[in-house]
Amino acid sequence: MVGDRYVRWRSISESDRRAAIVSDLAIYFGNEALSPSTYDEVDWPGEPWIGGGYAAFMPPGVWTSFGEALTLPVGRIHWAGTEIAERWAGFFDGAVRTGEAAAQAVQALLSDA
Ligand SMILES: Cc1cc2nc3c(=O)[nH]c(=O)nc-3n(C[C@H](O)[C@H](O)[C@H](O)COP(=O)(O)OP(=O)(O)OC[C@H]3O[C@@H](n4cnc5c(N)ncnc54)[C@H](O)[C@@H]3O)c2cc1C
Image 1 (tube, helix red, strand yellow):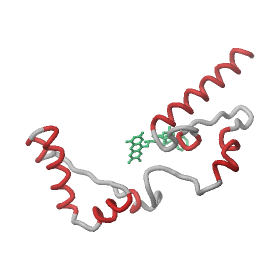
Image 2: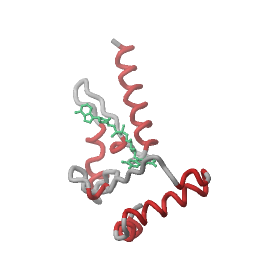
Image 3: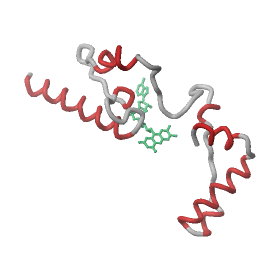
Image 4: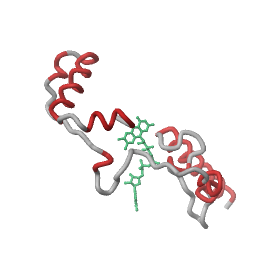
């Protein structure tokens, strides 16, 4: 849940949230989904060491002014991670793209050595 939906969702009780979720799951998986063996929720903004959404974002101007510095290798250290992806930053796709790019860069250096 994000944005206004998160605000509304947080204001209802856990038992009501659970009921809404399992009834949705039952649409896809049948009535067995109405009685899960476990049910866990994570409230990301409520996590003391996270305090926000599930992905990092930069305020306006940071990426366009300093983005290149995030990706430059430092000595033998090459960076990978969704936060430095030029496309799909904050998602698995961005993580995979930067991982592949870092692996290719290191592989090229090793084959030159
Ligand atoms: C609740 C939630 C839902 C999400 N839903 C989606 C979704 O539906 N679709 C989607 O595309 N993306 C989703 N994402 C985002 C996606 O999970 C991330 O973009 C992706 O996992 C980032 O991959 P990464 O390799 O960059 O970083 P991470 O997956 O964060 O990997 C970093 C790793 O480094 C390890 N690490 C950290 N510090 C150290 C250290 N000092 N030494 C050694 N290891 C260390 C960590 O333990 C971790 O394993 C979601 C994320 C969350 C939290």
